[in-house]
Length: 346
Image (tube, rainbow, N blue to C red; front, side, top):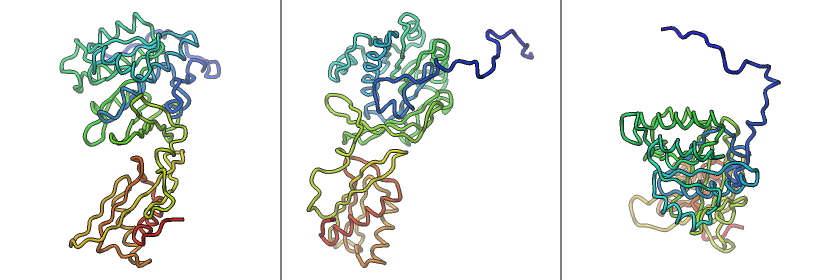
């Protein structure tokens, strides 16, 4: 049947008469997150934070929840509600204790059923809702197990509806598949307002937060965090993690600057050239592009007579940084020449 017209609840108005105050971003208390989001989180916005298991998503959002709770109390807003489906409430409490996130305005609930989660929202009237994670929540009204395509779509749809109706910003944790994509239906990324990627080497302290999609701000900003035993700390100047402490007289090192979005980031390239009798010398890279490194070695051999055909070459970045910008190829070449000739760079 055809859809018939109904009287709208609010009449259309000239755009100049519409108030934009309610849609302005509000700081969360975490500067690096606010940088990526474009100044803060917009009321009613739904933000998806995706990342590999163990990268620190839950730790980051627990810290964000505690700091946002403190900011909300200063403004006279409602509490922050943190709903976990990944762990028990006791486990989250222990982590909060470790990272000093025991704010009195932070409410915690362990739920995996959508109806119960919405009941908590109804009772608490939060100024911010954090759900960890969207793949662990299921609706009793929808067939399938938690994390399935239909369940993720239903859960995300319900949370988005609550966010828009009540003006509550929502932070959702999402998992990443083996190929680096966000787990769940592709429509999830289209439904939410902001999609961010939290990434970093598990064996390094550095973590980077990038906006892949942002309806309210830029997508070329990067947030830097230091993940340690006492929690996660935003880094306004991350050079201490990217540059080694002693570089002066060590051959094979070269410092450069690369752009991560609009943010200049210092990167140190380290190279090692070791003679070998093997028929096929090794070319091992970490943090730099393997094919462009091979091209740089070919150029050095053909143009500067720096022959590495009978040597293993290892090239890496310090601190787990990724030097993907083509401009860093010069630093790679300089570090290789420095290592091959055993001469420190100036």
